[in-house]
Length: 219
Image (cartoon, rainbow, N blue to C red; front, side):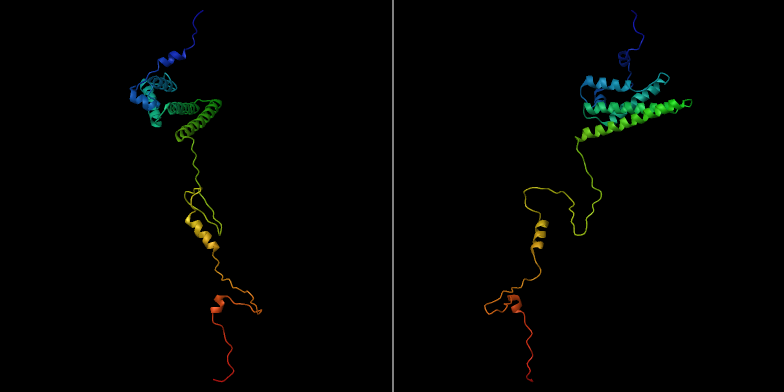
């Protein structure tokens, strides 16, 4: 039996050219890893995912590879997960641009333009998901809630700042509020009836001067 004439993907990957210097420092900045095998495999995969047709000049092909590696370094991956996401993001971006280029070809049919634009839209959505995944990975899944508007009705109170709930002492503001509520500004008058059936005035009212009837005698 004769050998299949179909191209071998593995052979193509081995022939990937890297016009940039593959030293350890650059490989680490592109991949986020210190493992040499992982570094080389990821860089080769990223370069292989770049659309570099044969009709491009060698200088243009080298420029595309350098731009992809610069984009991966710009993501600044700090581990293998971030390195893989960086490579996927660069590949997705290049695929988006290729779909848009094909959609805008002068002799492109309506169906061809529509298909390429739809593929580009899907890839752009994927790119945004990759950014969100990278941000979530770096943030450890933390969520931040921002309150932009606070409405306080009449008689209400709002606290701005950190509020902690625990068994500690109450805030001074709360204590002063309780003291203010407990204080009664109106005096309490003792109206206890004594043994003679007369109302006994309280000390406060007893100490106040009372109006005495004027004498009928001429002065």
